[in-house]
Image (cartoon, rainbow, N blue to C red; front, side, top):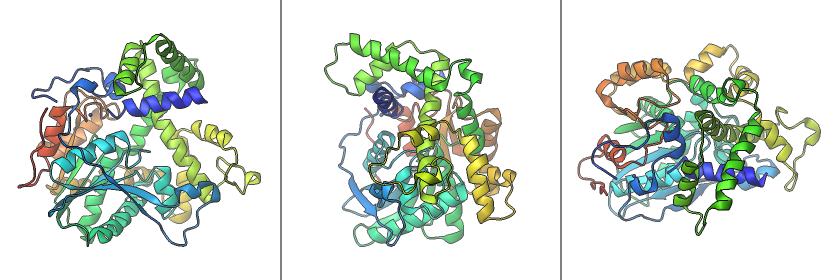
Length: 431
């Protein structure tokens, strides 16, 4: 188990790497390598004067939180603000990511340097968000997740009112967080609590269902052949272990981790498996937390309750890891939604978790802008046609970069900021 944890930590750090440059010379043309390797440390965008974000929390009084998850009772988020009046941007993390994950810390610094007050939020699919504030206790259904986010953002807006002066509101997010940003803008167009100036989508999926189905497929015989997921993970860990034992390790920093992964010979099968495992770890944590909160008996059997602090949870975590997101949707989420919303069918659920559901809004508004890559591994040709047809010149797609692989590359960062930077705010410094 400890070796598996080391792999996960390594993956999370590498799947979240920062960027510098003028022309687009991102080093990886292979989308799988780009997604796993990210941006080389020496080519990352550097923030000139990083700030120390402030950790904050929200506690919902009288909320029923299972004892075994009591450490998640408060919802944590971070802010980075200015003394003077400035626009405020909410950043929503991608699937399973926390408010202070590597990608979120990077975006927080970049947007703060560009002159924004910043509020960084965990994904509604992260355990802490789900346990502490989710109204329905089950994540992955975009309308519910966006309603939770919007409510939390209203609370934060009220909390910050006497502390900072806000000129305008913006919203952004990467991966699933990008889809959430678009739906938040749509919701706000009806409710008007923020009147967002812009919503920036960074590497969004077009359809949540179709994207996760592709990620799930990389942990099946379709990609792995006769090798099981667990055997594949052990095999990759063994490769890293051999490199680690032979390396002259002086500091386990980003440079070492990058060197290790890029020097270990990984085939596309391995790279796809690593991306699939990263997603599966996030979704299994979400499934496990939801099952306990709702006592749904999907992963934890009824005789195991009540779960106490100190109860061995590894068997349940392993059981959750073996559940694909597609199975979670079919076996858990859809039946639960149909209990809450009688008459809801599978097709409607899937459509409500895609940009097709708000297509007319996305076509008509000029508030939504999009940045991403043509070789994003979670998109197919239909998705790219949708983006081109709906966003037109409001979308900026690079030829390579995979899924969020070039998000910390300087050219990408400069373009991203130019798409939302309001007049009068600070220019980002290019390295």
